[in-house]
Length: 297
Image (cartoon, rainbow, N blue to C red; front, side, top):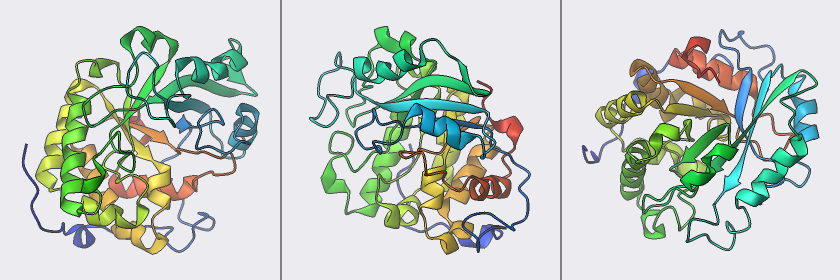
């Protein structure tokens, strides 16, 4: 694997302006060609970090005006069969997240909205998937993150203050997910190359990762049949004026060139948080990503 080059990318010179950069709600902007109709990364109140009001019914009601046709629910998960869960993660086991499946009671469509039941199964710095293989069958799809780097079970926290080491960790952990013995069962890699919840350093950390690595990593993911998530939270949490030149444009443009398949995830933890869907659609247009590039699930 190529190591880090201690130099910044020149993505600012390569990126054309975002059509909606002056309007966070997307109203009055140039209409995006790309239309998102499936959201596979939604947390209900079964996730400890989600709003208590983030219920199945609330998300269904919110989906209608957003013209979403498919909602995928993927709560945080650390299987009790896998040792090492923190006090925060331990209650969020398979039995816990299956409560939503029980609430669905066999329903696959509600008010014209198709419903999928998945999970976001944690992945540790030791290369450990926090979902036992014998429990895969409970889920219609599996999201695997490699970048919850604000958690000490995911990344040694002494890396956090060093952008170069942080970036190197993200590089190693992404390929660890791709090359995991069970990766054939992984649907998509959640919020790739995101430095945890440290939104202010996203571009700084990502700029340490060279194009050559992204070509290697995304080609490997394509070869394994693992999709790449376009995470709405990560895009819109950045200062609006930075989105036209953000590192994500470089990253996802390369993923597109490598022939990757994509999924969209709002990563919503509150039903009122629509992640400014139209803004993300315009971002996808810039990257050249179309509906044909998205996973058919």
